[in-house]
Amino acid sequence: MKLRRCAVLFVELDHEPRFEFTRLLQGGDGLVRTPRWRALAPHLPEPVTVTLAQLALLEALPHDEWVDAIELQARHAAAELAALQAVGLLLCDPPQDAQWRGRDDAAREVAWWTPALVAQAQGRWSGVDIQAQNERGLMLDAREMVEAFGAAPEPDYRRTPQALPQPLAPPRRSEFDALLAARRTCRNFEGEAVLDAGRFATMMRRVWGAVGTRELAPGAVAVKKTSPAGGGLHAVEAYLLVQRVEGVAPGLYHYLAMDHSLECLRPLAAAEAAKLAHQFVAGQNWFGNVPVMVIMTARFERVFWKYRRHTKAWRVLHLDVGHLSQTMYLSAAELGLGCFVTAAINDSQVDAALDLAPLREAAIAVVGFGARSDVLTTMELDPVLPVVPAHLV
Image 1 (cartoon, helix red, strand yellow):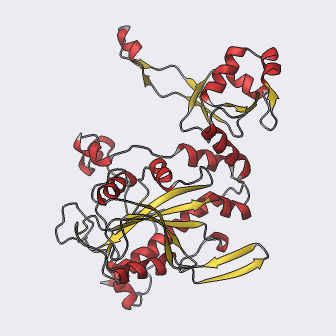
Image 2 (image 1 turned 60 degrees about the horizontal axis):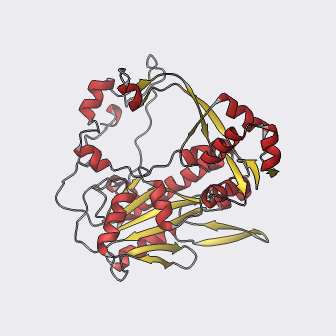
Image 3 (image 1 turned 90 degrees about the vertical axis):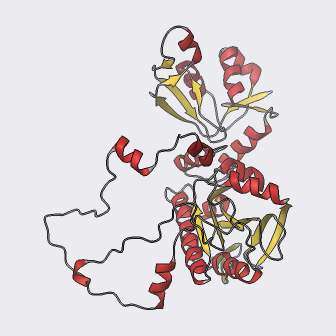
């Protein structure tokens, strides 16, 4: 058997108190306040506690070549090597854990900027249920947050409050202003309504459909959609969780942007689709009964092919998702549909359900659209108090 260190390793000194039941049994409050070193490796699901001796050992081991385990045991403590191998910071060949090895291979092969890679891997959710937290009283409402943390920073943000602002001319008005005014987030969908095929197809084509391509060089094709994208790459894919769409059976689908068609990944029973919808949006029950959710994923391999280890590329992917979301909002408003976007998602469960290749493609946000309910069970920002600048009255 041969060993090597994982490709990427970040270390932080963790000062946060943590609970240990044994401390409670010993007569204390159960909190451990001593600092600890935590290793954050993108191929692992969570940070791993390490000792200074283990960090020194990791520093001495190669990450780019395999070394015979017997040779390493002759130079390093066998117990420390075994401990690092058990938590996945040392990988072996042949692999004993295919998942660790596959994710580590992706970290090596895709040209990530390392801090973004760690943030992407360690910032994922799994098993979060916001509805359950609300029911248990674990989520603060706005009043409780003000009581606990004080007032939120002022919305009227000024850098030079002593200076007199320069008023701007009255804006021009057109039908587009009415469309912008109709744009809003819906948290109350009609629970039994089926989204008609025409508006469903229109939404998909308008927002995620490709409208043109341009070959930049043999093997390099840029794509044009109705929203901008970094480098013209459009590395964001659209996957669908369909619950109630005319002519489309409940299931998981992938939208083919070039062909304006769906490829079925997995058919679902209605109850199974509803369960996945609840999981995908982390228990935000006000979104769960939407007729269709669109999961926007980032194909990291495509964007990092051009922007190799670039400090801004990961950020650009999130901007791309934002552009697509705004186009989705405006299209839904024009079609008389309610819609939402949320980044509060159980990324790990979404990626597993869609069978996405780890660290090569991952969910970034979920949107959904359908008929709005006439009954407001959950608060929406509608109506609002209009903002009218004094010099425009």
